[in-house]
Structure formats: C-alpha cells, structure tokens
Image (cartoon, rainbow, N blue to C red; front, top):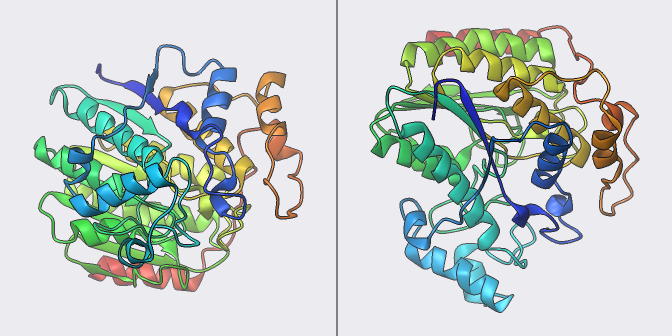
Length: 369
C-alpha cells in the first residue's frame, strides 16, 4: 500500500442485518456509510470487500468453545440455557439473530485484512477505514455489550505479530473494557479510553495503570473539552509512545444526538482527533464502534472517511446523498424525526462550550501519573 493511500473495507452483510426490532442495533449503520460514500464518488478504486475471518483466526483471542457456540447459534437460530449462561449468547443485549456469527466474523475479517495491509511493508504507510469494526466489549469466552467478537484486540494482536508498536485510542462513549481485559500489560501496546462516567460497563476509572490510561468525562462533554483532552492527554501520550500504527475506535455514541449516552460532541471533534493522530504516524486504522442514531452515525463515519481519504466535503449534500439519509428510520420506538441538518449536510455545527473544572483536574491528575 503506497504512502498516504486510504482503503475502505466494507461488506454487504450489514445491509438488512439487524439484532432485532427491539434492539438499539436494529438501525442501519455501515451500509449507510457505504451508500453515502458511493453517492459522493468517494469509494472508486478504494473499496475492498471484507473477508469473513476463519474460526482459527478468532482463537487468537477467543476460546475455541465460544467460537463454536457462535457458529452453532447461527446454524440453529437458538441456544440452550447452558450456552446462554456460559457464553451470554441469546440475552437481551446479545441476541441470537440470523448472522450472529457471520456478521461479527466479517467485522473481524475486515480488521485482520486492515492489519495485513498496514503491516505489509515497513517502509510504506497508509490508512484503512473499517466501519464494521470497533466491537470493543467482546470477551474471550462470552459476548458482552452488543459485541460478540473483539475485533480491536484481534487487530492489535495481528499488528504486534508483525512487530509493530500499537497505540489504541478509543473515543466511544463506553469504556473499552474488552480491549483492556485482553491487552492490559501487553508489551508494545498503549491503550487510551475516553468515555462517559457512570455509564455502562461502569469500568475504566480515572487513572494510569501500566499501559492503560482511562479518562471518564461528565455528561455534556463538548467540543472544547474534547479539544482539551486531545491536546492535554491523547497527543502527548501517543507521541511519547512513538507507535508504528495508531488504531482509532470512533464510536459515534459520544455525539449529542445519540440515545445511549449523555455526551454532546459534534462530529467536528472526531475529525480533530483523527487529523491530529494521522499526523503522528504513517499508518492508521480507523474503526467504528457504538452509535445508535442512524443519521448521526452515517454522517460521522462518512465524514471521517472523507478526512482520511482527502475528499472535499460539500456544505450541502447533493440530492443522491440526501436521498440516502432521507431513507433512514429509527425502525420503531417512537423517536422524533431528525432535524433538517442531519438530512442535508455531513458536517455538524460546532458544539463549543466551557472546559469545566473537573475536566481540567482529571487531565492534571493523569499528567502527574
């Protein structure tokens, strides 16, 4: 992959695939990003179809018994009480659905392909966007928090096998508990998670523990505070670590419109993080993650792809792109229709505000650690 190249890895498996009508992940996400990017001419010559990871590749982190249980659940369309109790498959959060193995295995295959591309030539650089990746809660022997597999861990392990130092930065509203579980103490890996305080999974307390740095932030977290965190924590730590590759998990649930958090970012804050990290390394892997408002998720991940691949973002979307957004829905649940800006633009209005004392104090505490 040539220096500066950007590749988008997607799959048609996400089109029409849903966790079920009552689940937050009933909404389309990756297919929306693909359709927006195609409508804007941003995928030509850059798109690759994600392979499905083979079971043996998944056992780099997950147990063989758990991988087999996922395959059996997809084949049978159900699980026994014993499997549900042991592996947490078939619960309200982690239901059995038609692609319960093949969809997460496709996400894992996408990040493993991305790792292969980024590690293929130590003299080369580039960036890969895998919006179907970022399932950061998955645990070795069980599903957790809507995540059946932990593709960030699988990606980082693959990059480490190639001899690359990896900085993982997670700006999802929820703590990257599965990634920390898998890679705490790992040599050549730095883990940074910025997430909403007192939010599920209720882990990730403020502090520096070995290679893990956690910053919980209060509700209402705004663009100005995100900038303070970027310059006061993320960039200094990543720069000091001197990674060969950065993996950025850009879960969209830190946006103001998301129904599963109480943070207040605009998508401009994510662009600032991506742009700044891109300047620190020749290799970058951009993942998706959380995000439960179909309009804000699609717009964010398409906007980040534009940044990564050097595309000009129009002030107002052309009719073909607007049609993609106008065709979306909540899929039930009685939530209000989106405002016009979410149908006609990609870039949000800035959401600046005061940098509150608790943010400043937590950054100072981490700087001293």
